[in-house]
Image (cartoon, rainbow, N blue to C red; front, side, top):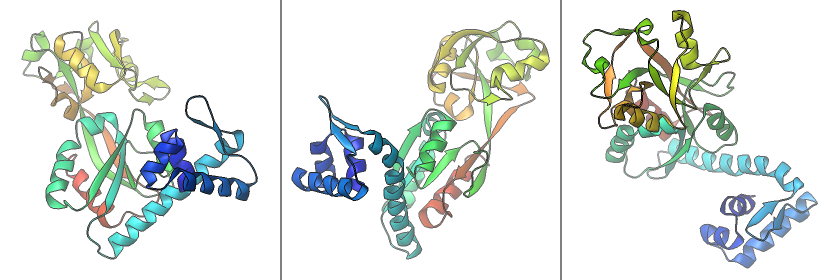
Length: 286
């Protein structure tokens, strides 16, 4: 199953063989043996790359979970035995990877240089959850996953700030800005902003104050939205850690403040390196 997952990820038998450090003939032999065991063809060679047959598409998620669970089991066993070294796979959202996590990774490298971190970034909470269900990482960092059956640890509440350019009149405010004062202002919106009660977060936030936000620019990522706001394209609501990594971005306090919970979640109990990493992450949002 490990060989099948590698071929699908690499989209090539030759690249998969190199990544696994085996010969291509040995890889092909193992794939054929797996197909005989399941009773049908799982892969098909295409003009460019390799594709999955219908049977392969049904088989792949289970194979991925089995392979990744085996890797997690090995890492958990090493951690329980006190073994030094190893690796830890972390899954998170792009905005957290960009803003909040770099100091944690830097500290980890100083304290635990023998444990390599692998970062898996995703654009939406839905994609993050789906990949964690498929066993892509040892622990995920992001908003609380509703109905998650594994361990979930609250890390604290992340501050969301209003960001403007340095020459915006709001940039010189000493008093917090109330939402009613933002009616008529042009906003930079991120396509990936959370949905609350069936509405995008900013729409949900503005509605009680009697206005609908005016969208001037729509972006894909929070990091791009903050850069647009810093350049004067509009105002934006963004995680404080992302705002503070952007040159020219000015944070403006709001009343009441905006905050959202961030969590760590996993399919299995958090032990060893994973538990230690989660503890370090909790210090960001304390």
